[in-house]
Image (tube, rainbow, N blue to C red; front, side, top):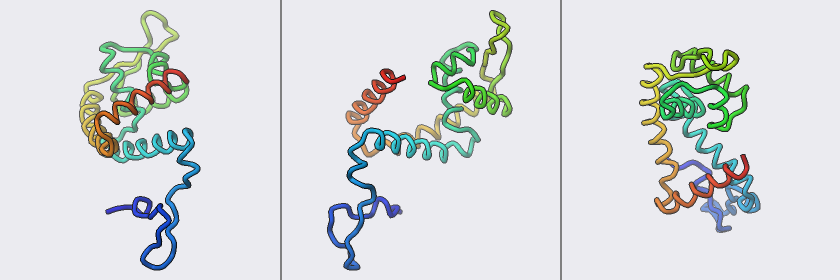
Length: 166
């Protein structure tokens, strides 16, 4: 079923009741990168939040679990922050949540006792496996309006924005 936002007419034509339909979003806003990027980010984040609800994690926690698996060894909270582009407080909150669900283990680093290293647990790997399947479906649905070539172009541009502005 279409939402009202997707079914509104934006071409200035009249609707069946004789009233002129309002555009869903101001055309002026659709010309600004800040609006487009923030709205796109909000929309995909909302889709991922909904998709991940059955496994009880949020998109940023999914990113941390993915990072821990690809790292193949425990990594510091500082490294998580740097690799996920997250501030220290947010990393601590997310790791606290994952640790509370027993998806990660936090230990004092043998190299630097002031540093905490994080590793994924067996239950963290299981939830990651389920979460990745749910996230993949949501992401594929979100990007399905684009061809593979269009998505590739958008992806490259977004990576460039992130790399240049981080």
